[in-house]
View 1: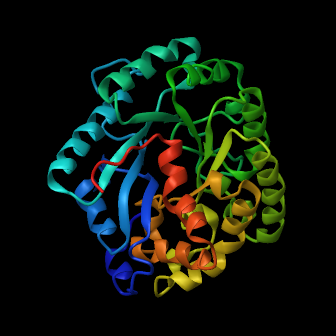
View 2: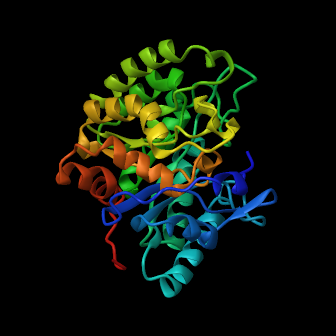
View 3: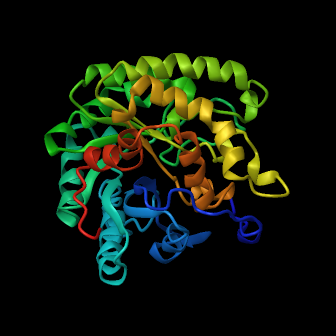
Amino acid sequence: MPINKKWLESFEEETLEPNLKICDPHHHLWQHPTGTYLTEEFLRDVGSGHHISSTVFVECMSSYYQDSSRALAPVGETEFVEKLTKRNVKNNPQTDIAKAIVGFADLLLGDSVEKVLDAHLEQSPNRFKGIRHACGWDSSDQIRNSHTNPSRFLYIDETFQKGFSKLYGHGLTFDAWLYHPQHEDLLALAKSFPNQIIIVDHVGGPLGIGPYQNERQSVFKCWKKTISQLAECENVLIKLGGLCMATSGFEWHKKKQPPSSLQLAEATAPYLNFCIEQFGTKRCMFESNFPVDKISCSYNVLWNSFKRITQSFSDEEKQDLFHDVATKTYNIKESLT
C-alpha cells in the first residue's frame, strides 16, 4: 500500500522521552519495482528524535539472487543487507542499522535447508540471527496471504517441522508471522520444539478486515484466549506493534489527518497491555514494522504512542520493552552507542 508522505507530514508532535534507549527489532529495507526503502529513507524516519541505538532487519523478499537455485535465492537478501550495514557503520555514528538480520529460508526443504542456513551465515557471520517463514493465511479473498504463499497448515506440516528442527543447531531464532485464527498451529509448533526461541510478530496478527471487519470484540476475545496460551510457552516471545497495518482494520490511513500518538495509544493499548500482562516485560519488545506501518503514522508518533502506554512503568520495565529484550533475543552487542 502506497505511503502518503504529504499526508504524514501534515501532523507533527514533540518526541517524548528522547533519551530512552531503543532497539527497533523489526523493520524492512527493500528495493522493489514499486518502491525503495533503504538505509537513507529509514534514517530519515529514525532521525525524528527517538534514541534508536540499533535495529533488526526482517526479510521482505528484496534483492534475491537471480542466478542461483530457488532455495539459495533468499541468501541474496542477506548479502545485500550486510553490504548496506557496512556502509551505514562508516556514515552514521548514531544508529547501528540491521545489527541483527532475520532472513528467509524455505523450511519446507526439510533436512536440506541446512545448506541454505549455512549460506546465510557465511554471508553474514556476525549479524545473521534468525529465520522468518511467514504463514499468514485466510480463506477470505479479501485478505492477502503472506508473501511466502503458505499452505493453510504450514506450521504443523511434517516436512516444514523437519526444516524447523535445524534452526536450533545453528543457533538461530524463528520469527512467526500469522493471523490470529492460526494461533493453535503455532502453539503446537512451540510445544513440539520447547528449546527453540520463537518470536511472534505483530502481536499475533489480529484481523480487522474482510469477514472480521465488524467483529472487533469477538476477534479480540478469541485473540486473547490463544495469546494467553502462547504465553504459557516459555520459548515464545512477542513483538508489540504491527497494528498500524491495514489488516488490523483501524483504517487510520483513510482519515483526513494522521492519528496522534494519544489516539494510537488509546486504540492499541488493549492489545499491547494484554501481551505485556501475559508474557511479562522479559518476553515483550516494541517494534516499528516500518515502512509497512508507515501507511498510518510517522515513526516519531508511533514510538510516542508506545511511550504513552508505558508512562507508568518502571525504568527497568521500559528498558526491557524498548531495548534489552530485543538485544538479548537477537544476541546484539551494540558497538556504536
